[in-house]
Length: 193
Image (cartoon, rainbow, N blue to C red):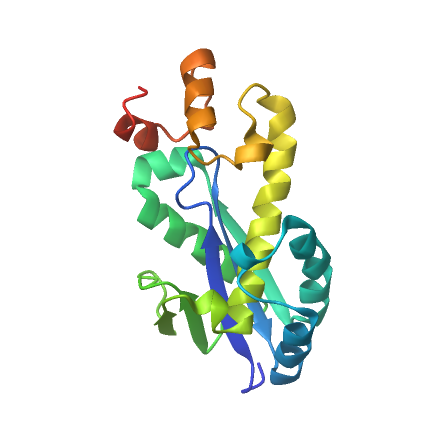
């Protein structure tokens, strides 16, 4: 792996009450970081869904390598959200052709199972293009899954709320009950089960 590569990793769906947590890792050269910045790559939360959709193919094309991993609602309930998030990150990293020499992680928490060099960057998705790219890849991938799950679990407005515990989503759970993709450990806190 060339020395000037930047390897960023981010997760999405950590606070959701439905479905998996997703992680993505993106490897970028200096030149391609600059190109993606010109295209408007920034923190996925600052972009519209349409803009994220448009940026995804550009990121995948310009990345030297990337990986996507996820951890299921069942794993989240069994292991807890932190361990499940780490598992999704490790799964994303295992998809890379080469183990990165250094990893830049969005947020304050260390990726404990990772034995390589890592730096934690709070609000990293607005400071590093590789993390911003990873956040877009993870977000679009998870949103696409939510779109597919909307059909299977109609009545919960999954595509609208993306599985997050909006007032509307919580009232729909009261009305229809919980599905096997709802995170029971999260719903216990809301006294819904």
